[in-house]
Length: 225
Image (tube, rainbow, N blue to C red; front, side, top):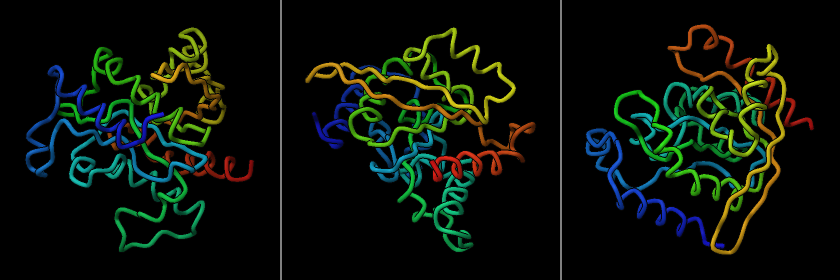
């Protein structure tokens, strides 16, 4: 199995192979190569993965997923669950990354605040799936919002995904999933559990204020399992 570094290089080569929408001004402002992926941050041995939609401006600046306003909510609750009260003088809450790995459906920032198209997601799916299957050793994925949860449709099935998403208790219930990815060494399979939550964006007015408690409940249940 190729190393994480080789996986990152393979993603970069795919990004350079053919154009797709990238917010190049944001990368230029941070003096970052727009074709180099920001695939993950955190511990590859963590039990939990927080899986989001795609990168934002702050994520490009710091070179880490989930470090903007919503991402800091995630980091703060991880810190609170595993380490106690988070400090006020550490906006990145780096210590929280000992207990979680952070990733996204696509390791690049789209222009504006629009989600990537299905075509772009499918283009980079094999790499993200390989990362989750071969390099991260955990088995619980907290999906942040609809886009992140429905990324797993090919592994669960559209009918089950849609039925689950209509449930009133979708933010408390779990959905088993088997990742399947084809690599040069053969087909890899990995059983995981999907634990969806609302997207932690201030624009998501219905759920934004409830998000910290919902995440705390998820993390607390996982830590006690």
